[in-house]
Image 1 (cartoon, rainbow, N blue to C red):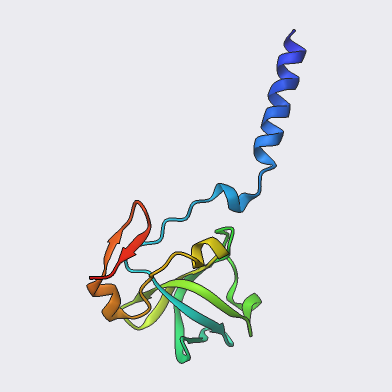
Image 2: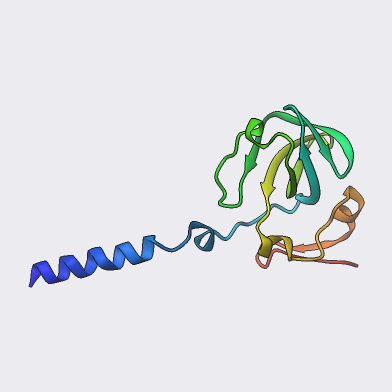
Length: 129
């Protein structure tokens, strides 16, 4: 009897853990996150929305599975991201977007939009005024 229960529990745990990691992670982006096109140059140099920019010291880059990604492994890649700024200048946090996250629109791309639009953090939805 106990063997059957143990085998059933092991099988259930296996099937629960075998689901794709991306399907299990619902990322909540902060209210100050903007969307942009990022091209990774030689770290800390980047191009953000066609303009030169820099990563902040200690910047965190998270891939589609929310795992930390080293900036050096992304050199030359063009990525659609959500990002935050440190002191309005340096890029502090970067999230490389999955297709379903990129489909959420509208999302602010400028500081002006960020300051004038309304954000629902629970639904992760922006509304224009």
